[in-house]
Length: 94
Image (cartoon, rainbow, N blue to C red; front, side, top):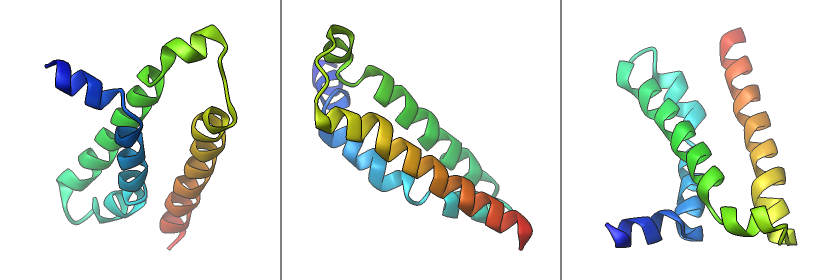
């Protein structure tokens, strides 16, 4: 159990979620044909959000922010949200 907690709090876990989040719009688009794909996409979004809230929370609470934290917690989520929103809106119009 301790190994799972250490792995969950690692940067590689967040990085792997970034890689998986790129396929989220595809999973939502295929959700019309395969019903469980949209559930997988929503699960990835929830998993990513919970990992961001738990990852390095001690340093954020202490105010020890650095450039990489700003990039990981602000810039990349904003870009990902914009990308997913554009993909979803373009699929609705098609």
